[in-house]
Amino acid sequence: MREFAQILVIGGGPAGSTAAGLLAREGFEVTVVEREKFPRYHIGESILPSSLPILNLLGAREKIEKHGFQVKRGVFFQWGPDEWSLSFNELGDTTAYAWQVVRSQFDEILLDHAAELGADVHQGVTVRKIEFDRGGRAVAAEWVDSTDSARSGRIAFDYVVDASGRGGVFANRYLKNRRYNDRFKNIAAWKYWKGTGQLAGNLEGATGVCSTPGGWFWVIPLHDGTVSVGYVSNRDRFNERRAELGGNDAVYDEAVEQCPGVKELLRGAEAISDIRLEQDYSYSAESFTGPGYVLSGDAAAFLDPLLSTGVHLATYSGMVAAASLSSVLRGELTEGESFGFYQRMYRRAYERMVLLVSAFYESYRGKDYHFYHAQGLSAREKDELSLHDTFLRIISGIEDMEDAKEAAYDLVVSDLTGKRGGDRNPFNHLQRMRDEPVAPEKAVDGLYLTFTPRLGLMRVTPTR
Image 1 (cartoon, rainbow, N blue to C red):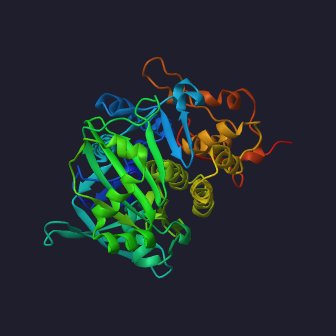
Image 2 (image 1 turned 180 degrees about the vertical axis):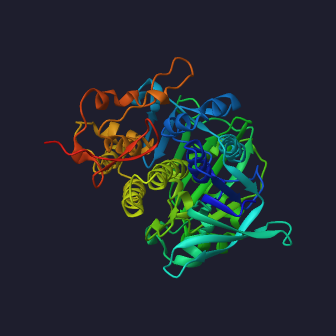
């Protein structure tokens, strides 16, 4: 382990590996410490189309393609009295799919790729203490081997990216600024099954979302022939039913009986895992940045799993964190400017999803009602989008990628061209944004994200 790194990244999940890989590619000295040894289990198998341009930027997309994960071409909803499908084909041919992944494998691919890009990766290492100077700036971390406490040390750094997931090294231990969302006090309970049927709808690998009287189910088919089936319910209601019925499995089984689509799906199927639970998982830190540090991915915020936003927010925040830190380390911007940009971009991405999930939970009145609420979440409003299109763009994560692109005054992305099956630029569904100049006022506090010739932030050049 080095005794010093320009950037220390705590956590090797999608947020940490994205930030570390991009920073290493820019030539910075990056050390990653990951508490566990990969592969390790993690929930959150459903990936959004917004991952494609970020994986292209990392140079990791081809590896994901070759691994053989289940292709995902949309989402199928049985919500209240309505059923409808949303196909990613409607976004354009370059965003027609994402994947359903086994996270242990997906995360390992990304972390190994970050190492190939030059990040110094150490697995099985726990950060037990962060050191701050007298001014409150994070300056070093004390670490210990996760399995051998005799092996320990200290690493100083210029900057640290806290991508430690729900454990939240900074937010939970030091800042004490994590706030749980009172609206989403839910419990998720899930199992893995084999020998299942299929939900209605004809979209390849689609995520199924099925409401029940007491909550909703996710249905996620995986490439190994198993299906992840999870039930989400209000925490108080779940606990009440558990006390009355005698256990978590009984609550899960009751919910299956109350959901015709899932009941039929699991008819004759075999559960191949014990039930797993998570609760109180919707939260955000009051601030995502501070002197010498940024919080990324789940360490900063996490939302209800309804729209499968976990990996999207992780990789998106990792990308913006890498761009922000790159400009600071190159002396192009001050820390305050870059971190302000990061805070605003990530906060907006998170809050957009919060509002959309709220719209779902508030009503069973049908798809048009949900789409109506979704339209109000768009940050742009310059396009005359239909309600259907707006909703689709938000749940696919594309809206956040467009925010990053709109912030650019002269964004060139020719180096992001995909290689698979004649794919063109992954932003080609936004071709009109390249065909006309983007107004400087679209920048965030006078800054915009740029990918060429280097990843970073740029100032808008005033026009006379």
